[in-house]
Amino acid sequence: MRVSRLALTDFRNYRSADVAFEPGANLLVGRNGQGKTNIVESLVWIATGSSHRVPTDVALIRAGEQRAIVRCTVTNDERSFQLDVELNAKGANRAQANGNGVRIRDLPRYLQAVLFSPEDLQLVRADPAGRRRFLDELAVMRAPRLAGVHSDLDRVLRQRNSLLKSARASRLREDELTTLEVWDGRLVELGLEVLRTRQALVADLAPHVAEAYRVVAGDEHRAEIALVTNVPADAEAFRALLAQRRRDELDRGVSLVGPHRDDLELQLNGLLARHYASHGESWSFALALRLASAQLLRDGSGGDPVMILDDVFAELDAGRRQRLAEAAGGFEQVLITAAVEDDVPEALRDHRIRIDAGVVVEAGAAARTPVERAGDPDVDPDAEAVVGVDERADAEAVDG
Image (cartoon, rainbow, N blue to C red; front, side, top):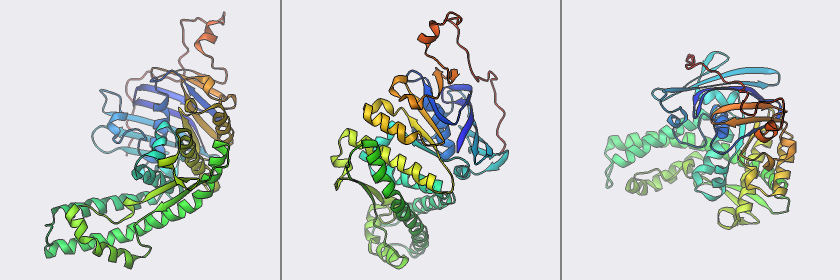
């Protein structure tokens, strides 16, 4: 799988841009704050239906505008898909695949992308919510229908929590008790489906994580993952536990039993990574999780996912840089962002794209730095060739 073209209108700091990508390695290079990460963020949004950097989509729309347009062409097994997304400051977002309206949650059917970014360090060190999101996004990429299951479960938990908060702590009215029991039934049904999906995913992912950690770290540390849950394995036991915890839930006004309290436990040599791993070991573990995810998707029926390495190499020592380059280089397409080109191993610099203040200033295998261009007697040092910038002020809306 690969992205051959990406067009942005009023997305982040891009008024309008059109970028062509090649198979293999594509390096987006430019100073910090110029918009490199914004480009890959738009692809992550199409692949997952959300940003990896901000919780709301309003921040993705260029200041002063009411909507942003993201268009990309994806090729998979010689089949091409044109994906169009309209992000709206007010109202629902909309999406198309080959001109036909699709649900946002169905977009992972068309584009699979695995992102590693500096934020991924929090997968190791922060609270369980990020690790649950990591598992669920990967599960949806393997089976897109699960997006609907997770959406339904979120709705059940919101409704159930609202009822718990509104009920009197001492006793429930009969109508409230009946309603709560209805939501209990849905929580059991959906919760068990999510639990079993996560259990199967962790079992499949674990050997890939162990191998990926050895590849990235270059040593024999033992990296292990396990799902920690308070959800019983069958419906009857789940219902019994809900009844047992009823008073605690009423006192606190929240649902205390369910997959929304799961955690993905990460261990390094038998110790919890979030407590004992060094900075370098935490980086290696986060990288291992992403590389393992890509390998798992590759082993499935979807082919290679697009591998995205956002501002990763600056944080790694020379040995880890080279080992990561060797591991990622085998994928059909890799997109890399870097502020300093020399941070990226030569093997991942096949196609270079230079970004400056929301403008694609140069692209291609022969792209050179401003210093290199200034030394060329045939090049005007004060001129920049702008590649793929659409000067139209407005973009045609995406029909839902």
